[in-house]
Amino acid sequence: MIALGCDHGGYDLMQEVIAYLDKNGLEYKNFGCDNAKDAVDYPDYAKKVAESILSGECDKGILICGTGIGISITANRYKGIRAALCTDCFCAEATRQHNDANILAMGGRVVGPGLAIKIVDTFLNTPFSGAERHARRIGKIEHE
Image (cartoon, rainbow, N blue to C red; front, side, top):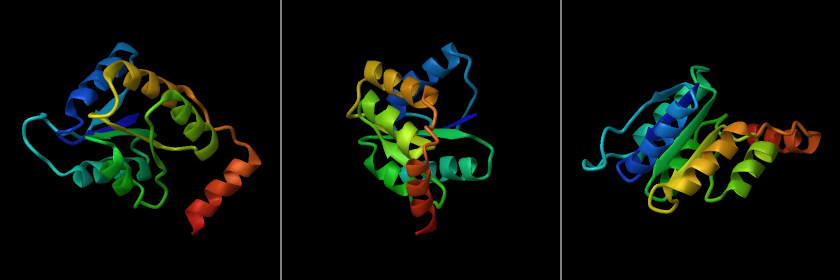
């Protein structure tokens, strides 16, 4: 299951992501927010998504705020979370293969809907390489 979270700056783009997930029959849990009009605090949604992954309720997450920066910084404060801010498919593929990232972060005011869906598709469908050097590096992140 995929955990979803956004603030008001990411709401519209998250609706595009939800349409993609629905079209492809992918299960998700939407932690909000509820609209683009009312300002909310992105750390609240990053926390919900991170905790759902750490508890095992969800396998991966997608977070969207205006730039993707604040929401990814917040998510990465949780031990065991590897949130990657991606603005293109190359980054989405590399972060899955090399970092085994478990959260994709994007900026609703940075990435357009067409590209965002390609980034989401790449992120969700690229496996971790399992290469020893990448696993070793992830281990260093987790134990520091």
